[in-house]
Length: 340
Image (cartoon, rainbow, N blue to C red; front, top):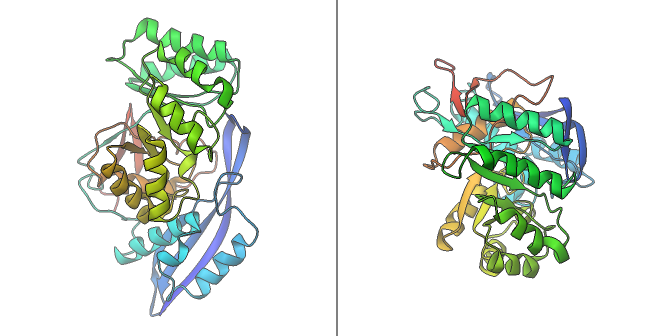
């Protein structure tokens, strides 16, 4: 008989991290453990990576739902948790770990054998101009060929000057530039701002306007010179028919998959299948999970057969993160050999 338990954990940022929604100093998360009653020492570990203020399942009764899931773990299916994305993420993770012997080996592949690596983008968090410039220089010196900047919190002209600085030294072929607006642009100004950004030959702009404005987003996708990626737009879109309608209506160039926020691993795989029908590109990004979630997320991503730079380099943000077999070598994420 299956048993389960959960535990709350608070991650602390090494330094305040800025987004268009404000400054983050800490982040709550939850760990879930699943084991067979007859073999309690073999335990599957998962992370229910709730993101306060962003997750669709950030609502009253979250911990009560976790208790219910743990109490009935033997009867809970992935479909039962469709509308509890972060819990589904954690349960799917813990079950895979349990099946594979409780070694935190979630998705065996050449990556988990230490034989392959995942290329990642260098993420530049929001800050004042001098701080962001320093962070950009550090990433470029490290050898990143894909840089992603969070924009929308400081003066737009200052953000443009940062992009100009990069493009003065590195061409599009040398450094791929992505920007993430986190919905910061007002609909009335979005097209003009996208036009200004187009000068810098960007790979994409994530979520230029707030989610839920499908017709406005569809218009931007039709008119802009800069490819648009949907990110927050996927949150809370839980069923296949609704996912299909979103892709058909907006026709985005890319979607950004955060399994903790968009339906767990199974929900993200459904997004990938549907994106293929609409010739929509995609990549995977972490959602500020601890190293527990990031480990499983990286292992899953390595099985997807994509060589596009992924957004999986956030494991070093916290002062009290847990141990991880993942190591970052330049612009690559690798698994230490003999980790399992």
